[in-house]
Amino acid sequence: METRTIEQLSENFQQKIDADIKIEPNDWMPDNYRKALIRQISQHAHSEIVGMLPEGNWITRAPSLRRKAVLLAKVQDEAGHGLYLYSATETLGISREETIDDLHEGKVKYSSIFNYPTLTWADMGAVGWLVDGAAIMNQVALCRTSYGPYARAMVKICKEESFHQRQGYEIMTSLMNGTEVQKAMAQDALNRFWWPALMMFGPSDAESKHTEQSMRWRIKRYTNDELRQSFVDATVPQAELIGLTIPDPKLRWNEERGHYDFGDIDWDEFWQVVGGNGPCNKERIEARVKAKEEGAWVREAALAFASKSKSRQN
Amino acid sequence: MEESTYTFLLRLGDDSLILGQRLSEWCGHGPILEEDIAMTNIALDLIGQATNIYTYAAGLTPDFNDADALAFLRFEHQYLNAILVEQPNGNFADTLVRQFFFDAFRVPLFEHLQDSKDTSLAAIAEKSLKESRYHLKHSSEWVIRLGDGTELSHERAQLAVFDLWRYTQELFHMDTAEQKLLAQDIAPNLENLRGIWLETVETVMEKATLKLPTNQGFFGAGRLGRHSEHMGYILAQMQYMQRAYPGMEW
Image 1 (cartoon, rainbow over the protein chains, first blue to last red):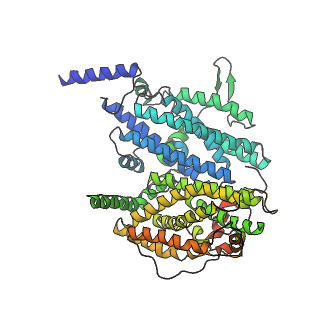
Image 2: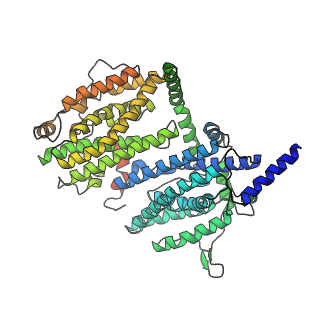
Image 3: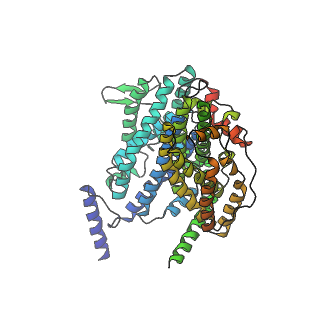
């Protein structure tokens, strides 16, 4: 009896998915769907929050008042995105605190790109242009993801991400219109961030253990390789337009496919960085753990004050 | 007259810039995500205020072409911010008490300046006042929460009050520039703001169950360009790009 009910529920669920009807927090959903969502949304939330660090690294050194203000606004947006996304995970029955603990204990990942250091001002350009550009490819697709709260958070986030991508490209454009030193700085940033940006889409479809199921549940709407290809196709002309060279000797337009062919990604590097051996993995997690530990007394004070205020009212 | 206005604008703008710079050091390291957002937002307002103020000031001097030149190309002794705003962030209580002392001064200052005979200054003050009111609300609430929170937060907030109090007297100092502007109805008598400021401070301290020190604190000379030892490091970081790559556009 029970089994048949679950089967029916599962069938109804898949029918809704296939009909593109959004799943809402109170709807029945398979346990694994819930788990897959928690994994993906919390990874996304953590990426926003950890992603504040490499850019935050340059706020105090931004070269002009306008650049400083724009960078502050961008990093602030990322904190806001983190907040929406943690709220979306809360609708799935896991608290922000638990989600964050999972990050600190290494149970949940964040985008591997943030384990690379930001060494020059041009990195603010490269990160905005490439990292936010890659994020948009993913996120535009996620505006139609099957889980309602996630899809709605994405719509809001996408609007801001396209501003981020533009400001990054604008930084690169200014550098390429500048002195030889500035041009070299921009090219160097592209050289360092190009391949990690391609890795952001995750392992190739053949290697991706989550893709197939996620596609069936329409959590993901395109595969990693499809999104990576769209990113390359969109970005190469942008680089050429301002005189930057993509650091890939195998890159060429394939007339027949209507896409760019590009070289092999160093998956060994990818798995090393995902596995904790990137240049900044340790620093990024330490910074987050430190913020949490050093802020504990502040959160406790806020709770204590709130409960005192409440009891005074009664 | 222009020289006095210029000096006064630098005192105003440098307070905003240096405090904004300090606050932005918190970005990504706040005790809760909501505070990361709030502090970044306040930093953003302050940088915006500095930009508006410097843009006006740059028109009054032959020495600096634009707001960026004023922000990034002066020597340390040419910055005229109060020593309060350059103090290190310390812990969250230090940051919020510093902010509160400053906001409680800024609100009545901008309230007066929005009626300034100098219409450019009045316009800047009117816009900045809205922001400063929000900043004051935010910092007051936190000072109260920390003061009347746990034993530990009370202790930290109290220490911050004792430590930072000494830097507050400088905010009300009337130098020749302010005297001249007062005579022309361009700027208020800062000495008269002290009473309003103290009333705000005392009200919040009482709610926060915190005490104020009885001593007056020393007289800081940041307004004359003589800073604490922290200032050089702030500038080393803030001016890094402009100094390492002189004359480039970004």
